[in-house]
Length: 236
Image (tube, rainbow, N blue to C red; front, side, top):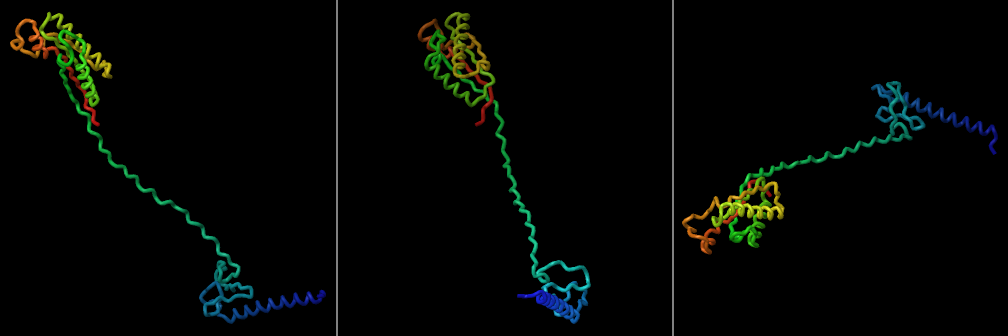
């Protein structure tokens, strides 16, 4: 069991050893090149740092104390380097292809003439089945046209009085308009007119004579309806 005298003796011995070590390092530093070049760390003349018993470098009298480093501090821990900011790569440029504008719509005029062989019987204003088929085909053509005006003109042959034939031509053109409207044509775009017997396409000498089956057949081209559309062609 160690008495108080023994503890005191051991502590005194440790302190003496530490003092001797420091004095020895100091004496060694005095025998070294004490930094004639103005260095902050004392070296042994060969470039190696002179250290004390704790592993720390001797600091010369030149300049401020050096920064901590692994050479002069056995407990040195290097500071963490700041992480560089991650910069996303630049977005690729947006390439916008030049768009070629579509060609401008062009005005167009279409004309259709339907005779009595297709539309009406003699002295009638009722559409025949063949007449409805012909009008269906014509209305189908309007799908490619934006119509502005649809002019419909009715005609009659010379058989009968001028007054009667005028009314008959008006009845025929009204029948055509009603049918086309039922197929989707805008009524506000349609204009109708009856010309009676005033604009025949046959010549008098070709269909001469009184009313007969032969004359009626000869005058068939005069019993007609003309449809003219003025509008803009739709580009598809």
